[in-house]
Amino acid sequence: MSRADELYRQTCLDILENGFSDEGLEVRPHWADGTPAHTIKKFGVVNRYNLAEEFPIMTLRRTYWKSAIDELLWIWQKKSNRICDLGSHVWDEWAGEDGTIGKAYGYQLGIKHQYKEGEFDQVDRVLYDLKHNPASRRILTNIYNFEDLHEMNLYPCAYSMTFNVTGNKLNAILNQRSQDMLTANNWNVVQYAALTHMMAQVSGLEVGEFVHVIADCHIYDRHISAVKAMLEKEGLDAPTFKMDESITDFYQFTKDSFAMENYQFHPFDFEIPMAI
Image 1: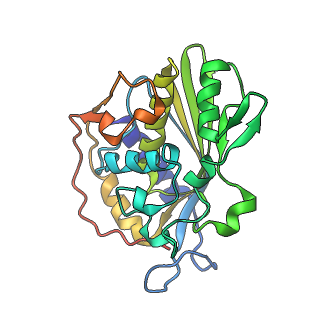
Image 2: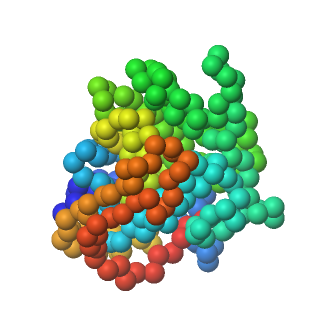
């Protein structure tokens, strides 16, 4: 069983056995038929992954990791909010008439700010500091820009990354305000674990820990049966993560720069309704 499977199982069991149900309360999300989308949740979930030991991808079900990395590169490399720049259709329902998701995600990372060393956007500032100021405790990004929230088609869920160099290892913390455990958990873990690998390699560092902090960690009512069925399966060994070691420029990575050797996973035979 992969470490990602273990942590996923622990988190889901804790939610199902000890979580708070908002059934009967007024909630914002709803199902396509208009029914309120209720959840069982835990507050303040923290999962830690040692990237030096294993890449955190689940085997209890398939994670479409290439699409996940493609979305990550759309946000962090292209710094785009246009869905035509994205290979998948995961953002289609949040696209406005102008074909963008508003001033969200990649748009925020691409805004330049003035520093004493010159102008940088948030991504380039991280890359600069990892090379020139690795001992800094200020290496972070934050896309939850209150000034622009009214122009975002979706408020950022995964909104902040903090990078910390300890010795020759790069550690990172992802802060997430909300997490749908069935549809999004391992998708986000794979994305930001891969980002930590990328940032480490181009900065001449080794990977250390990836820490995932989730404020509202929940399972939707119509997802419970699928989650329980997944938890009955025996996890498989994690695949071997490979990344093109010749790349030294963050902007040269593509989704084809990565491989998951011997990635085995259980089939997933459930229709997943999406709360909106």
